[in-house]
Image (cartoon, rainbow over all chains, first blue to last red; front, top):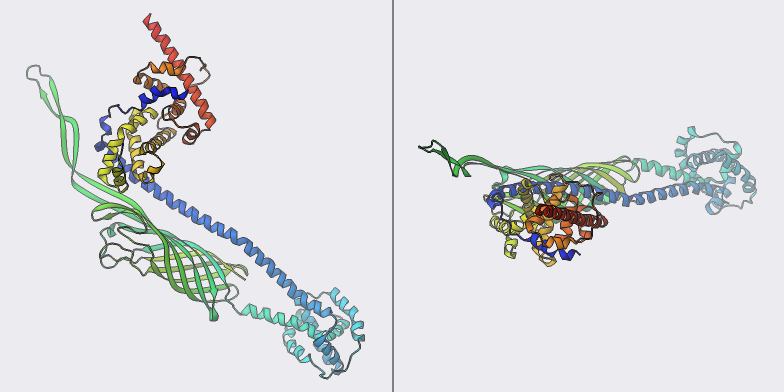
Amino acid sequence: MDSNFDKLKKSLAENNQPLPPELNWEHMEDGIFEKMAKLQMQQEEHRGRTNWVRLLGAGALIAVLLLPLFCTWHVNITTDAVSSRTGPVQVEYAKPEGREAAVLNSSDNVQPATRTEHTSRNHYAAHPSGGFTSTEGEQASAEIPKLVDHPIPPTEEPGKGIPSTAQSAKHINTLLPFLPLTNPSVILTSAIAIPTVEPVVSVSENSTARKNDFTPRKRLVLLGGLSAWSPGYGQDKPERHPFEQPLASGYAEMSYIHPLKGGYMLMAGLQYHQLESRFDWSQTINDYKLTLTDTIIGVTTNALTGKPTLAYGDVTLSVKAKQTVLHYNTTRILQVPVAVGKTWGNRSWQADVLVGGAAAVWTQSEGLTLYQGALLSYSGSKTALINTQWNINGLLKGRLTYLLSDQIGVTAGAQFQKSLTNWSAENGVRMHPNVLSFELGLSCYLK
Amino acid sequence: MVDSDILSRVKQRDHAAFKAMYEGCIAYVYAVVRRYVANESAHQDVIQEIFARVFLSVHTFDAAKGEFKYWLRRLVINQCLQHTRQGKSPAVVVPIDGIVETDTSVEEQLTNLSKEQIEGYLQNMPDGYKQVFMLVVIDEYSHTEVSEMVGISPETSRSQLSRAKNWLRNNLINNNKISLAGGL
């Protein structure tokens, strides 16, 4: 049915309608270019917003992807803690063998008073870290007859195992005031299990050491922040320089830190920089020609009738005009940073200083600028004005991490980058941008 | 309409090429705009917006995918529809209850009308019908394409077209009656 509308289609598609004079190019061009500038600004703003949304989305995605990893670590650590806790307790109730049996054998040659003192301290030491309860103590008491009744063969090295217990007693003494009293039968029980208590004491020593000693660990660091930058022109500045103004820019980083010996570390990762600038150019034209077409240029009066007649024509006027161009430029850079550094810290804080370089692996510049008296729009990593491809930057960064848990910390810091290669593609112009970034994010400690 | 040389020069933002492209396309653009935007005082603004978008997005035109004319037509129509959606040209709403299906062929009657008369009918057609009628009948878009452009479902597009034809048919009959009465 629709195909029968051929005449209608033909008729309406014909371009034989005369064009109204206001649609001539001369009348339309200013409006078109004004709308183009407006649209371009809107596109830039939209693109900027889209990039930020993408960046945040990527950050959220990475965080979500890493979340199960943290959960797994948590479970592992809990499991380890349980196993180290249950270990000594199980040993304490096990049938004496090997070295334990030797200690057991040696018990005959030791003075009862000394034995009681050592064993009681060892037993108490087992209590806090091993979770030794009164029920467990009673169970231990029940074991006494069996252990005491066990036939004791003669030994060649009487007293073996006791010196180590004596050494550990020094640490145990510190725990004594916090421990509950136990009945003498339990104390006697522990005399049989002196060596089995040793690992518990050593665990206590390790945890004390862990509190005081700081060991750098592998880390994944996710950061984002704001950057302030300057083009870093040399002595010969380009013509556009007075009209350019760098704006607050964005920055994001994902990096891995590998600890080296002596508190040193190696960092590698990805960094994304979005450098924004504003271009504000205006000029005053003193002799701007403005033509008023088909306007009244005179009035003549008929001498006979006295009737006035209007005379029409074009009038060209010279006026003072101001031409303004406002635009935003964006340079996006994806870098691979590599740096070495030193780290210091304690259980809650960690400070890092890093020095290295960053190589640009992808770049793009977009904008409009003044070049040799003409406004030039550019887009790409290599343009007539700048070449951001394969740039190398020196970097220096310092940051501080507060550990929220064993696995995660909040990191804040600052980074300074200076381009070692020349960005400018213009003859005689040197451009080595400086970028100062303030960063905030998360450090995820790997096992 | 526009040769490839002008197109490539426009992509390089050559001012002379802008003018050449404008002059090559304006008649066609104006014909389409007149059909979609009833308000004549808005034509200049709409056309400026269209050419600003054409110059900025001409690099997205791919000759392998079709003629430049169709790429331009799509852009022009989209801009006209956007203009209408923004309320710059208020839509005329006509109740559909009074429209009765008749057996008279619309096409047959249209063949007897001049271009100006057809345009007169289309000008008076409610905007909702007119958009779909022109997109499907004149510009030959499918109902699926129309649904994407106008933001309605393909079923709504079909029913709007049917109502547009009924509207046109009824108006043609009424006008015939009036002219017959005038002749007597």
